[in-house]
Length: 213
Image 1 (spheres, rainbow, N blue to C red):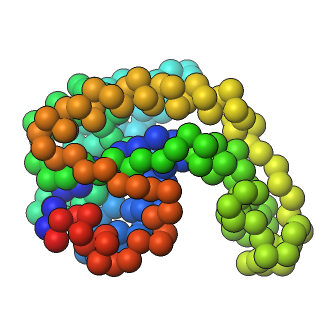
Image 2 (tube, rainbow, N blue to C red):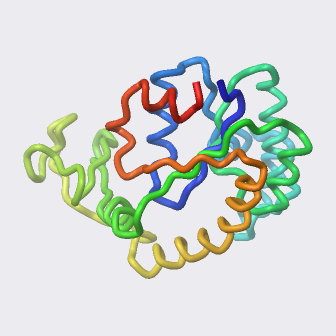
């Protein structure tokens, strides 16, 4: 079984959803998300978290060197464990750094058409009362305007950063940065492509097959 797995794909590919599907079949695997690493360090005001906060407060990108240290710190607490890493690496230098500190067994590339990604991201909204997630196109509430979970009134409202122009820019930037990373892991014979148009329908056996078990 692959011990150390990278999950990679464009915004809206469903990396978090697919990770959750894997954990249902293999609860012993630890899901490590770079977003969670940052939030954890910021919340606990660790030295690395405080350094990251300085950049974020200025509206600047956290440099690779600091992101690398945050990831390394987290992986050191998972030595000897099974894990899947979501949201890293984001460029070739980070991929090279990852090779220096650990072994990667499998690089899962989630593939989804731009049309589906657009519907997933531009259609998403949530209940302000309980936080339940909905999608105008793919997952509307059973009764229009009423939350399935808590019964509160809800209406479709896009997040301010969820618009077609912003999404196009994000996807273009992803494709530019992703190509060399995908090529890097393909050359190492670690690449496996996954059709992520509906990972919720994958069976346990199909997930085991994807993880090469």
